[in-house]
Length: 125
View 1 (cartoon, one colour):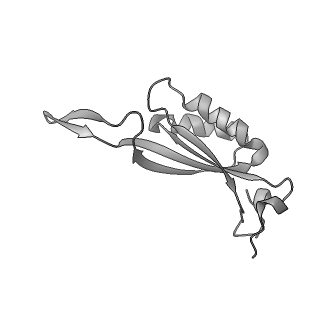
View 2 (view 1 turned 45 degrees about the vertical axis):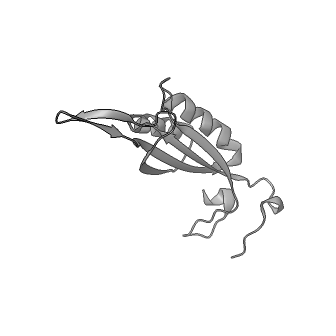
């Protein structure tokens, strides 16, 4: 199978959306994305830090630093025409207004292939 440069593809743009959110927002975000037509996503439990840069907790009377905060990473591949709507939906649904709500990154996908059928690009998602 040959990889075709993105410039040779017309109207088949595919985007990868990577979002980090607070764990308790996962189900709400999943429901909102399903409602707008997102048919699949990958979910990973991760730890990281940004502006929060960790916090301190008390366990059995001893205070200790938690340098990495638990987060959920969503990876969603959608047709380019749907990317803005997905980003808007995640932003509205995951937002609490407090530090640590997360980040969203949108990347171009050079090629997508459905393993079972061999369909490519937007047909593969």
